[in-house]
Structure formats: C-alpha cells, structure tokens
Image (cartoon, rainbow, N blue to C red; front, side, top):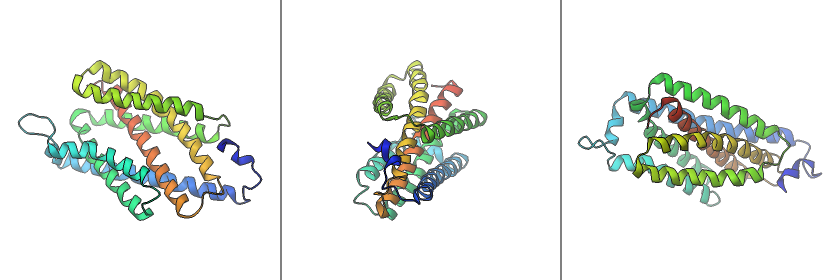
Length: 239
C-alpha cells in the first residue's frame, strides 16, 4: 500500500527536500495554468472576441464554440493516456494549449455573471481548495476509499451535466453545482494525498517524476476550475 511508504526503510535521507521540490513543481504547473486561463479569459471577453463563439442569428454556439468548449476534454485524455509516450516538452505544450482553450471557453462567464460574483466565487474556491489541499497532505487517514466514491460521483455529475444540456433545467443545474462543491473539495484532499505518496516515492525518478508533477498540476487545476464553476453557479443564481 502506498500509504505506508513513509515508514519504509528505503526512503532516502533527502526524501523531504525531494518531496518539497515535487510538490512545488505540481503547484507551479497548476498556478501557471490558472494564470494563462485567467489572462486569456479576460482578454477574450474584454476584446469582444467571445462573441465569435456564438451564432449571431440563433445565439447558440457555432462550430468554433463547440471546438473550444469540448476540445479540452480530448486534450485531457490525450495527456493522461499518452503520458508515457509523450515527451515532457510535448506534455507541457498540450498543457498550455489546454489552459488557453479553457480560458477562451470561460470567457463567456463575463457575459452572464457580474464581476463581483466572479471574484467572490474565485476567492471562495481558493479558500476551500487551499484548506482541503492542506488537509489531504497532512492527514494520516487513508483517503483512497473515499476517492473511489468521489470519482464515481464525479462521473455522475459529468453525465448529469451532459443530460441537462438538452433539458435546460435551472434546478438540476443548481443541484449539480451543490453536489459538485462537495465532490471537488473532497477530491482535492484525495489528490493531494496521492501526490504526497508520489513525492516521497524513491522509485519515482527522472523524466517520469517530472511528468507526474505536470499531470498532478493538471489534475489539481481541473479540480479548482470545476469547484470555481460550481460556486459561481451557486453564487450567481443563474441557469
């Protein structure tokens, strides 16, 4: 079991500096992605380019809009499934493209929500995310079993959100967001504990360790974005 790795005798004496370096890399990737997303999102909305994602006649998304909104899903699968085959620079390039595309898609929130609501949702997300990240890293309780349940709930939320795209139910959207807050905060703690085990694993070295740091940053970034969107929906009270 990975949760016993810290007690193993083969853990090197310099494990803590090694672990700190790994976790620092993870959060560097995550914060870099958030910065790219934030800048692109604000610029795309402020410049008016966000309207290029929608059909002027019907108000629905056009072809570009669908590519921008759903393209990142394919990129995530590509990065995670192709981690062993792709080089670190290739993964980094895909990570940048993913962050930028998500920024373009999120630029539409400036058309729906007030700036104060967006700021409140962001800082609330940061507070909740930070709290659960610290909890996940410091707790001695094995969160693996909770992670399995939460990931199943995550899949359920994803399916429900897809169905609601056709139903257009404001109530269902609100319920999904409420459940999402619980699921994404919980998964933050689970993911941080998983990253801690990787950070202290002496067998995880070289290019593989660097790739795992990038993928770890990606996963934390995705959790933060989903938590932010869930809280934004709740705070904004919009469909």
